[in-house]
Image (tube, rainbow, N blue to C red; front, side, top):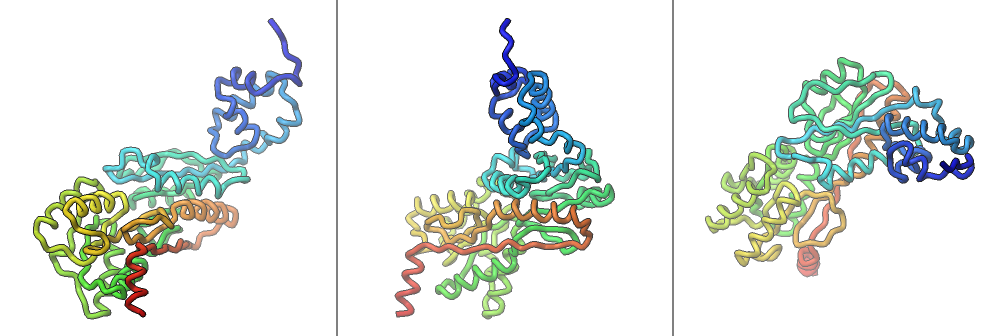
Length: 342
């Protein structure tokens, strides 16, 4: 058996001893925040047993383990969202959280609850805090408060003025988008929305009423959930009725894309014949669709920053942080406006 000298031990040796990959060893050595406590301890133990350079071990700060803060990114999905962290929106949000805690003595863990769950996972108020993502129930939030757990709600679809939130102003974005459509000559606006879009729709309604306009009852079609099949069925029925509006607002980009495809298959030009509008998280993308963009990365980043600040200051006054949204329009609509102004 060959025994290596301490200064010749490499990451391969440590990885084999700890039963992890070389990249995991590297992440532990570099204090990466996304490592579980068990994995971290296994790697540290392997480093010590193999006699890895002591100056490297000192840089890892194992003495800070007991004082390490833990932030749990707690996903509260809709029933139809089987694997929410696989969705790009939530993946980008999680990236923002990771960058928000970079360089801090904080460990991040990701957990997903069943829809409507009221009982929080086992947490320690002295070390643990939570970023609630998606659609957390009132009961879950109440139990977190009762257990003394700091939390921030990060969502574009719910709002509370009595809890810490990082969100977007859906009502205002609805108003701004409606104003943009009206200024570009679209008077009859239709909606394919789900129940979580009510604040956006309220913004459209407010702007229309201020202009002396209103939505026709037949132009408002509520979808029961976020399943794409529901939107596809609705647009097929609407086309068959031969009474499409001038502009159509669809809940989110993944639903707007099949709607766009179906319209094209029926030789309905977008945006020339019908202006399609949606809400998404891809700022700057060129498309035939008018898009109001939110930035999930910023939602996650600012949630992490505020939660750390809240814990350090022992802040109890709720804060609402609004991340701005932006509007992107197809070039052909912008050109049409320029021609009108000339």
